[in-house]
Amino acid sequence: MKKAILFDIDYTLFNTAIFRERIFKAMILSLGYEEGDLSGRQVREVATEILSKMPFLKPKELSRDLAKKLGREEDAPFIEKALLAEENFENILYEESLGVVEAMAKVGIVGIFSKGHTSFQKKKIKAIKYLFEKNHIHILVDKHKSLPEILKKYQNFKLYIVDDALDVLHTASKLSPDV
Image (cartoon, rainbow, N blue to C red; front, side, top):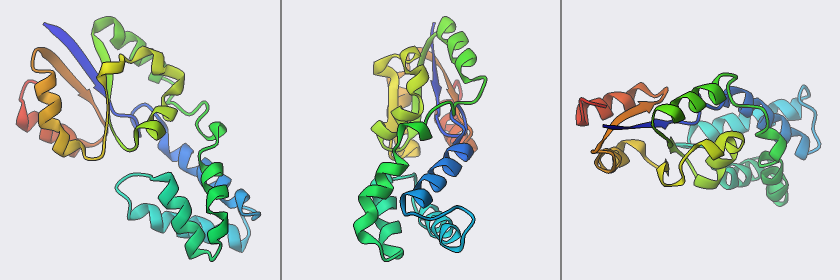
């Protein structure tokens, strides 16, 4: 039986903690503040509060809402540009991600099963994107609601899901004990 291995991105292949630090710094600097000063700490606190209410990071909304809460609505495009800067995404995969995905590509089809905006999530795996088969990249808004459709697509495969979200893995195994 063919095998398919679907990887989550955040906290599985991609070091989201380091990424958040980078984007906080980028947003603070885009507003002309320093990280350690009062204004820089305020940007971090407000951004953290906004992010806590989002199901996943939405760059445009975060930038808009942060600018609004800081009374700097005109700076939203600058915040978004700083947040999406390529250097924030560079060399941020976990050290073992490349080797693991390469090894799994020898065993079966490797793909993505992740939550978020497609273009944003793809930026995170740019360095190893060539290893994933295009038809097996699934970036969705709600992984739980999408699981039945994903399981159906891979019904003729031995499916492995690699994810740090235990609730997603539990739901998958309840829907299909063979996953």
